[in-house]
Image 1 (tube, one colour):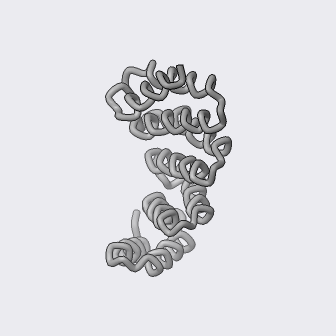
Image 2 (cartoon, helix red, strand yellow):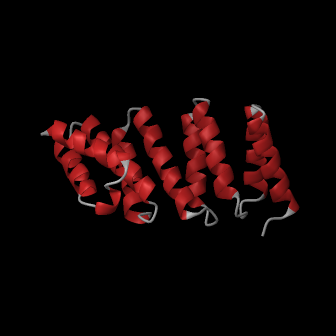
Image 3 (cartoon, one colour):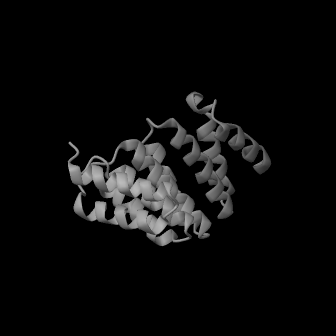
Length: 168
């Protein structure tokens, strides 16, 4: 159930974001997070907040927003899969592939229903292993992904096949 406060803060936050007022949007999203943490909109708001913080180069704060989403019992599975992916990608951008891998693996272990995130997670996990120069784990990750018929239609599967061939 959404109440007036939920609706108002969400609407104002996204209106500010659409108008290009990032600071205003962040203020509304932060207020929403503090005042209505049990809202069913919390996942949507924390994803928007984290994405906005990422775009501003504030990766640590963005990861904090995504971690808060993961801790919420009100966020959906799809939102949690996206948050895990974004945290992993953020760790890769910070040149910390060893920290990224567990986030990607949690997606295909815990959130397998969302095949688009699973495909992205497999590919990114393999790439992270490559950055660590762990070619065996990279090969195993790509091979495991390619063995899943329901991922074959995703662009990430084609990319994984190319990366696997390049690894020899």
